[in-house]
Length: 303
Image (cartoon, rainbow, N blue to C red; front, side):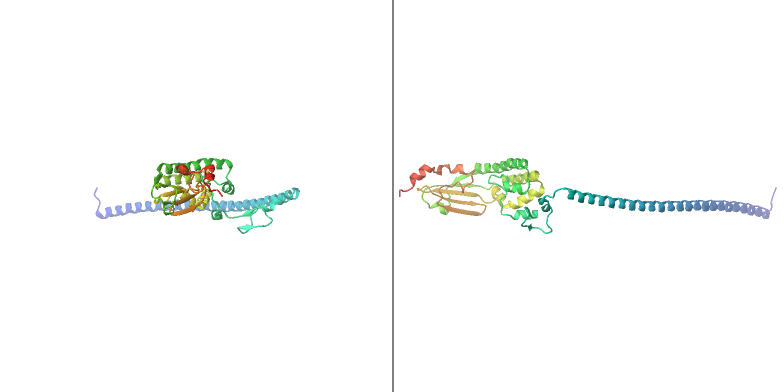
């Protein structure tokens, strides 16, 4: 059955209107569903906001209650401490347990002297003995226990002795006597110890590490600052100049001694012994010049 073009157009338009109407109806349903969902979300948001406000109010109430309880507890503790102080006999020394407002401080009636720790290195105290052991006074100031001091002394003296052994092994006699010894009458001996930079650096580093391990960084640093010159002299850290020790024994048994160490020199004449001027580990090298007391008296002129 043939339709005219007009009829076909009318049918097409009718179908198009039906499709557009369906789309419009579907869009309206979607919009309505979206509005309902949005309204539901807004309602849930309002409920959550109300719950959050209530929770905040409850938290503020708990904070206020906790602060009140803490204040009450502090008041009770203060009152209990006050009652305890009243019930306990007062120790006169208790009033000196709190530091003064300003340091350093000297209070005539106090059994304590209050000082800052960083002042300690400025005291003219040698923290170490000649053999490397910790000075007992320094150990007391730093509140080191006897066990700490004993352990440190074993290790520190061992390191000093190790370096001294290197010096003894490398020491050599020389005919190049210093001026004060060269022209003097009597038997003379000059010993030269060459620089030992590698051994000195290594053993000095071990010495410092031993202190830090045994006493902790703070106390070790205080000691090292106070004993800087002593450490340099013990380990000859300049590493460039030799040490020279010269002794001449006069016919009357007296000595002239001349030393040069680390760029500094010293000369003395007249003592009856050189042991106060020559390091103990090098003294055996000068044994041939020693004079015992009996022979020294025999050498003295009769009055």
